[in-house]
Image (cartoon, rainbow, N blue to C red; front, side, top):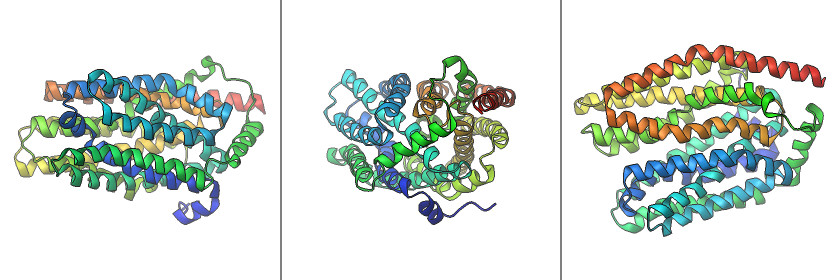
Length: 419
């Protein structure tokens, strides 16, 4: 069946229109920050690459510890209120980077920035799960991904223009624009009604109609958490794009610095063009997601192999290799996103719970802790480390099918018991 058009999705889900528009707005600032944040930290703040990496990993660790608490707070006080609150929190936290005067303060602000960003994604999944039919949920999440990648691409172009100017205010624009984009996102959520009571009523109806109100014990969540752990390995594409490619290009090759920004824009453009097609082909099937997750791991292994070949190549062949690397990495990103949405929504022990979806988000949060350190170590130790990392990723492939089948069985047993 042909995936619904973007206009059809907007018409069938008026309550999430504000969420989609707000997500597009803040993604512009996020894209600018992703493309230029590391340069701001090293040039403007004088931090070393190791200090920046430590801040990213520490922030991710704190966010991982808090993400379930954010979901639990949303269940208690309302998903809409939390959506607005998290965007306001992000705006204020990013502005704090302008006042950083040392490593300690930087680490603190990095933690403040990471928590609301990780908390946003499970809440968005909660809204989509509550207001959309099961067969349309993946389509909506894919459309949201397309919108965000469009914003990322625009933000990346803005960052390239800003970073070409050497003055301090131009570097600071990376932070200002990102903070203002989150403020605009929060405003749109309120104005367009995406944070209104309709969402909370929809969430409450979904829970009342599908699941018991009792809390799901952690032992019952264990199969779900194992799938989330595998998904965290697949999420390594985030660190490969944001850290692996920039460091490999700047430290291990003679390629021009514009190649880094070009790689980021190339990635986001490809994601915009093909995300919904990939998600539509998956058809929200858990069985298909098993195959796609294994494919993702293989594509990540191929990306690591390509990065091992990059150093020492001539300018022309280096650019060809870089473009090929981004192409394969983007395929891994698209397949991971589609499979992750399907598994997070299709295997949830308690449908419609922000806390449960936040539990799945722990996998992505875990990648943000170990991913930057792992990728940076591979860059430092050269080609052999990339090959070892590629082999390790392939070793996870045989685990995919049995882990997902076990979670499917657990979910089917719970549905039978509640019915």
